[in-house]
Length: 169
Image (tube, rainbow, N blue to C red; front, side, top):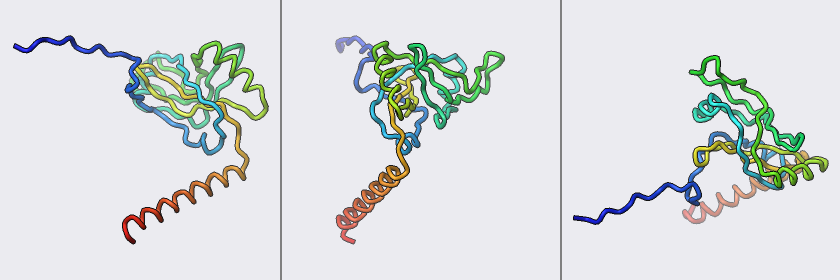
């Protein structure tokens, strides 16, 4: 008879814990220069969580504001839950972000500088909790966007040439 081993307990602090990404703001990295990134929890209602798990969310117009020592996410669109009743949520309501006081104090100082804003980069589930990746960002000028596109195109072309040489074309 083989010796019995105790089953391993699930730990939320494991590094291999995966994030289930629900939505990303791809345009944010194009429009803004990312200076710093924070992870924040979101205060949600029950039907919002169900709608998020179904993937019915848009980060396109979302931004965060620091008011009275708290951070709020505005413009985030979470579609109403299809099977919800009178308990359904408002799609574009203001949602509170959950951050440590020291992080909020740091953000207050940095967002007061001209040209700095808080932009959500992605929305995901980690350990069963909904989190948002929030970036402190500075808006890019048109010429900066053009330079970034030119660099990206040059990098792609260089990778194509290297790939062709490896294949012997």
